[in-house]
Amino acid sequence: MTKAFHDEAQEGRARGVNSAATDVLASTATNLETPPLTESERAQLRRFKEENQRRTVALASAAHELKTPLAVLSGYAELLLNETLGPLTPKQRQVLLEMDANRIRLLHFTEDFLTYSSLDTGKQNMRFQLGDINACVSEVCGIWLSRFQKKGLPFYFMPGSVQPFLFDYYKVQHVVSNLLENAWKYSPVPGTVWLSAEPYLWERRSYRAVTLSIPERRKQTKASANSVRITVSDTGPAIPPEYHQEVFQEFLRLPQVSGPSTEGAGLGLAIARRLVQAHGGKIWLESERDKGNSFCFILPFIPSLEGGHHEHAA
Image (cartoon, rainbow, N blue to C red; front, side, top):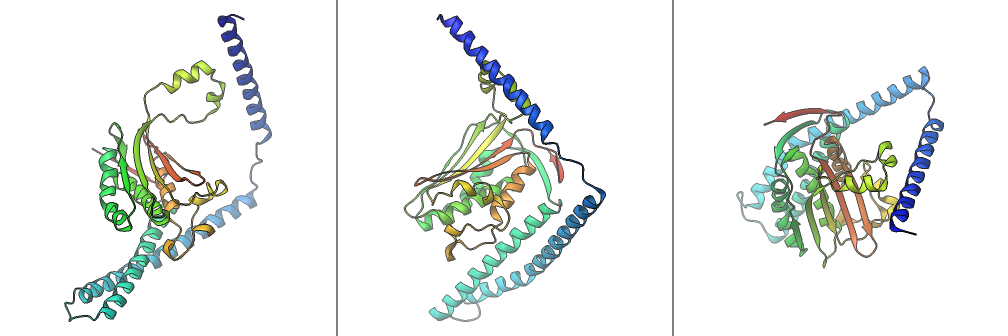
């Protein structure tokens, strides 16, 4: 068999597979069409959404009311710990430090819930600006570096050559910070945490993509990057594949990693998912047994304008 004939045979098989895949997709789409909701079902769905929003708003109001007394507690704790009101015994200092640590934990929970509620009710404003993603991520690294050093956990940032693009600077920092906190909590010592940002060609799966021939798909992958991929990798306990989707759900705590050192509301990854989606991006988890986890997310160079409130600034 000549090379030309061999290539032609391969192309014929590829066209046959693509044609069959197209027929299957069309047939499946026809068979899976859902019947329209009845008027009663639509009314019930509206009531459910309204009730859910009322509960979210009520809880957010309660969380907001906690911020003032927590700020007052912070001021008193600082006065006492600085010995402004008089010297402290070692025991008194220890009690105050434990009290302040719990105050900070409650403050983080309150802030997380307020962020989540604003996303859940569609009140979160997205402010897209042309920016440098490496500078954005590097600022977060500077904030977290001392915590990693104190724990004795090596932490590395590997920037990539990424063009400036439109994104919400502080929302992206919030996502990266949540992922770094996750890695810091669950990575044992000795261990390592890596953070990287690299240009990425995001090929969104579509009906048209299935119909492309093999040479066409190869040519498409050589195109220039249309997004950035940011990855936080750690050497902590690998999360089982059955939890890879659930881990981004609200208030989820995995049973095998729960404990006093991993306290939290279970909202960090859910908030990260919503903020990434507000950019029109995608977030997911990869893990390998005895090696750790990698939380990855993609931000397109052209952000999505779907959902929420968006502002563009020069």
